[in-house]
Amino acid sequence: MAIEPVYSISSKATGGGRDGEVVSASGHIDLDLRPPKELGGNGEGTNPEELFSAGYAACFLSALRATAKQAGASVPDAATVNVTVGIGKDPADGGFGLTVAIEVSLPGLEEAKAKELADVAYAFCPYSKATKGNIDSEVTVTV
Image (tube, rainbow, N blue to C red):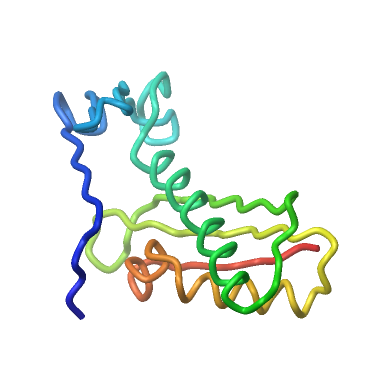
């Protein structure tokens, strides 16, 4: 598969990585990073998992709207996607691994249709494609 990017952006991390700063080339992101308290930090900044969950949630909602439109369906204005990213020890190699829980809310739709739309969006979303087989993922749908 050869992807020809139509948009690219870079970000630079400085300092201690998880305990430093990250700045995007556009300047829209300029954030202090601090490990969360659960990982021994003071929790007074953002962290890679928080940034990943925000990006994934926005991307998934866009994928949901795009795939529903392609299928001739509509996504309610009140639709939401909440992505919870977890980090913990990976017993396979002693390092760390991630988990992802995607909660899709499609109020007013029939449950079967909502599940179908979420499944198609999951297959279409670039974040889902990038993490498929690498991160334990779960998608739940509420109507």
